[in-house]
Amino acid sequence: MKLRSQRWFDNPENPGMTALYIERYLNYGITREELQSGKPIIGIAQTGSDLSPCNRHHLELAKRVRDGIVASGGICFEFPVHPIQETGKRPTAMLDRNLAYLGLVETLYGYPLDGVVLTIGCDKTTPALLMAAATVDIPAIALSVGPMLNGWHNGKRAGSGTAIWAARQDLAAGRIDYEEFMNIAAASAPSVGFCNTMGTASTMNSLAEALGMQLAGSAAIPAPYRERGQMSYETGRRIVEMVHADRKPSDVMTQKAFENAIVVNSAIGGSTNAPIHLVGVARHLGLELTNEDWQRLGHEIPLLVDMQPAGQYLGEDFHRAGGVPGVISELLKAGVLPHPDAITVTGETVAEAYANASVSDHEVIRPYGQPVMQDAGFLALKGNLFDTAIMKTSVISEEFRTRYLSNPDDPEAFEGRAIVFEGPEDYHDRIEDPALEIDPSCILVIRGVGPIGYPGGAEVVNMQPPAELIQQGITAMPCIGDGRQSGTSGSPSILNASPEAAAMGGLALVRTGDRIRVDLKLGTANMLVDEAELSRRRTALEAEGGFAYPDHQTPWQEIQRGMVDQFDKGMVLKPAVKYQRIVKTKGMPRDNH
Image 1 (tube, rainbow, N blue to C red):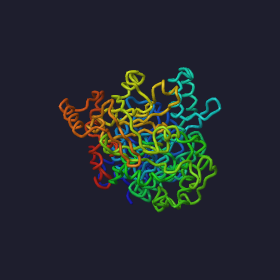
Image 2 (cartoon, helix red, strand yellow; image 1 turned 90 degrees about the vertical axis):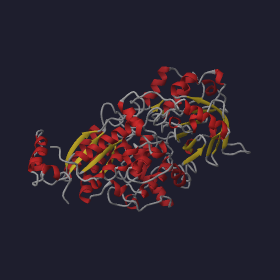
Image 3 (tube, helix red, strand yellow; image 1 turned 135 degrees about the vertical axis):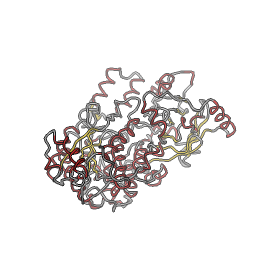
Image 4 (cartoon, one colour; image 1 turned 45 degrees about the vertical axis):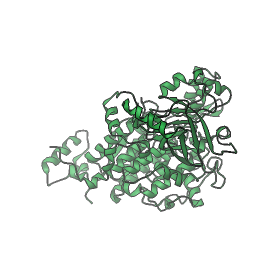
């Protein structure tokens, strides 16, 4: 097989262009003999930078990736990817997922690369890189940067993100001051790496492994551990083999692989952001997933991993207990992993790759028959508030279940008076307003925070109750929104509502004081408002020009708002999904001179 890179560097049929392509790559010391040797040229898509602390350790890990590539007879070209940092980017890092995707597509397609190592870590870096690899479809393998070490505060595990959500309630209730709040936050992030909780980062890195796109055991190794560097070396070696085998993302990320990942997500207590991201990746491969698929395949899967926010342990504990291989081994033994025959980046099936996997600590990774919780997957809801939304059942606390879901005459359902907020600023300004008369029976609603409205879809739905209720021991109220929430949050909110208010979904019509009914048995969420009144509200809103949202602040905000799809469709760029396997379907890019 003639390598793609040879069309740049060794094409005797067009010596003029070959000379132009090759001469500038010689000026930092690489030789002509290397570039014309027929060795695969492997890219390292570098997401590490000072702006991306969760991924910054990839600057070091890339050195071992290079060693592995060279050891297997490849040549390495490292290049930057647009930075995405969940805790650093305003208005939301989700705004940049599709931007990083676009940039990486252009790099992988337009430069002399035969394969690529995708350096993943912080939440959105994983789907952005997988989406790009899917679109271009050259051989690709993912490498997780790994979670931080366990955080500790006052002798107890302090999980990144999760500790902050708990501390903000203590601050609101007056139990701690600002200084202690900052101390707790700092204690929860003790080393390089991404969140040490089962937030979106740990979830998406675990699912990249479950999809078959990482080496077995790669997802959960803590970033500072020596095994992380060793895994980087093996990843570098593997990508060279993949180029020779022409093993591409489309060979690995099949419908079977996505269905396996949905089951693994339930077993690990994965983030509510996972459906958005995996649906997005799937659509770039021409595959369709829906919220209903997440319920159909995942809801009856038990929670096996006792890890914050749904449990008590953290990332180091998960790795030592067996990590993703341990979870997959339990699912295989129970016969519930849908497709053990799905192919991984090694060319082995899942069953083969994890044949020797086991669990070393059944307190952290429970046996399938003795889980943390039964039926731990997502519920897909629909009604006149939205066409579809999801709810994470593994974080429904006993307090929440007792208060809202345990009426013997109406089990698994609740009704309440809506308190509507127009975005997070409005929520923070008015949550303590006594005129709202918020009591435990109310339902907090936030809108205007979706892909178009925010823009980008912000993690703001996990709203805490007013301080007065927190002081009474009420730590969670029902929340509904057209945005997202952090995967590190333990709030059982109804999220990712599609279509959003800015797209004139039902949430645009709800008003403070309306009664809302949520029925988990039926999978419904409805305003108890008659259709004639809703029609009048819609007509009036349309006459005003539709649901108002903030002006664009940057060119990219305007561009993305004009073409972005809704959460249930993966929040992809609508024109982008028609470009699939472009190395094959579109052929070589034209010469540049």
